[in-house]
Amino acid sequence: MKLRDQMPELNGATKWLNGEVTKSDLIGEKPTLIHFWSVSCGLCKEAMPNINAFRDDYKDELNVVAIHMPRSEKDLDIDQVVEVAKEHGITQPIAVDNEHNIVDAFQNEYVPAYYVFDKDGMLRHFQAGGEGMKMLTKRVNRVLGKETK
Image (cartoon, rainbow, N blue to C red; front, side, top):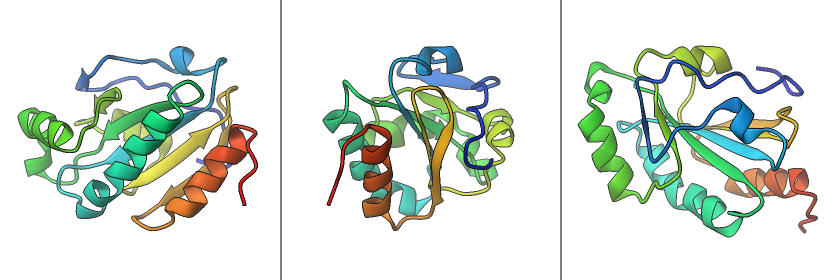
């Protein structure tokens, strides 16, 4: 995906945990942070407290959705996804994308990966990797119309 692209549909998940959302649920009211993660990704687990903080700190201003992107055969076990989500306090909706339908729609190749969309569903920021939470915070705040120093 390129900046200013429209959010793809969130179709084709193997299963949804913590409630299902659609693109139309996410567009119009408030911006959205979509993060891709995997149970076999150590950096994803390290970043999860930061993502949960976004979810909690901005709950009235920001949608947060998790996409589980399996990286190996072992990652396809939905019970393990449920277990890791519970361990790491992931209460936002999680699309388990075992067939990579959503991954392909986003043209995503990385975990962790973060996509920030404005309230109209336009991509405003993308980043991948475990570092850069300050940059992600800055971009989320910019999309929310808040200035940060």
